[in-house]
Length: 100
Image 1 (tube, rainbow, N blue to C red):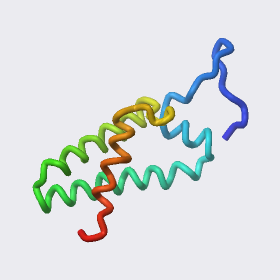
Image 2 (tube, rainbow, N blue to C red):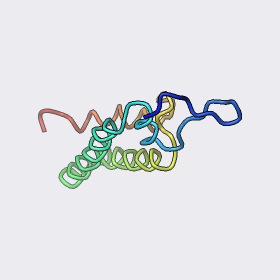
Image 3 (tube, rainbow, N blue to C red):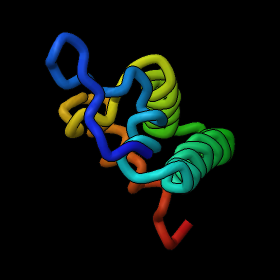
Image 4 (cartoon, rainbow, N blue to C red):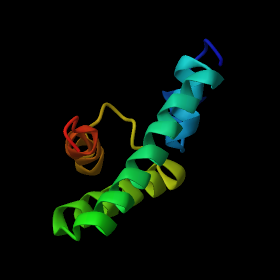
């Protein structure tokens, strides 16, 4: 990472990619658990949707996929004000249920 802020015409600029923003702020090794969390969330939703055929898991799966694409093509990490980012972190709690 870099300790200096990126400036464009004397205005601070954020990274254009969510993964780059995490690597810039916290280091290159901090993006690995975040990426693995996203992969596991998608995997768990696919498994549960195939097993239970419940619409809620399909909606969570679509939100997960949208969030991953938004992290790639945009910056979803700007203080979690993005509704897709909030839904990603709040709804994935259903995948970590101990009883299933």
